[in-house]
Amino acid sequence: MLIFVHEIGHFLAAKYAGVKVLKFSLGFGPKIFSRKWGETEYIISIFPLGGYVKLLGESETEEITQEDQTRSFAVKSVWKRIMIVFAGPLFNFLLAIVIFGAVYMYGIPVMTAKIGGVQPDSPAFFSGITKGDIITKINQKNIERWDDLAETITESKGAPLKIVFSRESRVYEVSLKPALQKVKNIFGEEVNAYKIGVMPTEEMITERLNPLAAVWEGVKHTWVITKMTLLSIYKMMEGVISPKNLGGPILIAQLAGKQAQEGVIPFLFFMALLSINLGVLNLLPIPVLDGGHILFFLIEIAKGSPVKPKWREFAQTVGFAIIIILMIFVFYFDLTRI
Figure 1 (tube, rainbow, N blue to C red):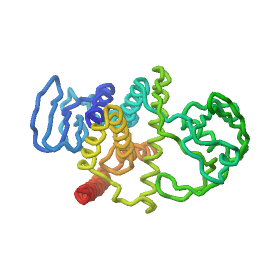
Figure 2: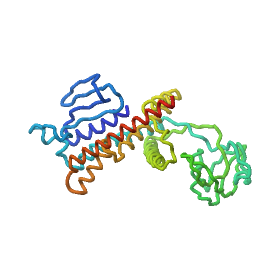
Figure 3: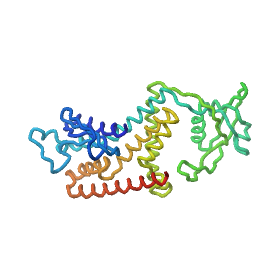
């Protein structure tokens, strides 16, 4: 599904730019199924580890008839070539936005702002907040879910907070100042964060958004996960995250199965997460990947002429070697987990 969406992005962009599409393949290697419709051959290949769209004029040695000269990828402007290459990852991001938007319209479970516990000697403890209280406002801002509460406290930067909460149908207001604490972030690093010392309950409500709000939430969620993916790559290069966290097709299949057992919504969220990962990784400036091609086109814009074929071929050989090594590593990690 994700590969199809990625390749259909390239396919539609190429068609829009007037480039002839010779092949559209899901998978690599020998053909299992092949059918030619119009000028394009549609293929399902034996190894389901990716896919490709073959465009007229991609290869330097390709012979092109006089009739097809204007429909060659090579003769199109550099901006059109960038558009065609970028469209694949773009469609992966768009798919994530659509999935998130649909899920937010259907409704997702969110934690309420009900207090499930209070840490001893914390700001909340000294202000009189207890288990079972429901926080409704912080500094005149309405609080409806736990994420609102956590976000507002973090954004306070330690400034005093006026908290309104309800307890057994009665409303109370207290003032407190968040305390700076050492906590571990998502990468396991110790960081400073402002906290008031409260914990959530397992109580959930279903939140549904109108189509416009759902799509906007989908855009925001896609952006957050994109940033998190890039940060994860950086943290892995720093050594903060172990490369053992990398996963390949086996881990993806295992996680997809687990999410499917949890229900449709977790499975769709997992699909959106993978789609974003696919978009981000394809935009890395590694020759062979879409990001590598875009890098060559940007160099062409800067120097006013295409990169010499011998340098492109050398870079692509290196890039291909990097991808093969990476695949070996992720397969190894997948097998050691089993």
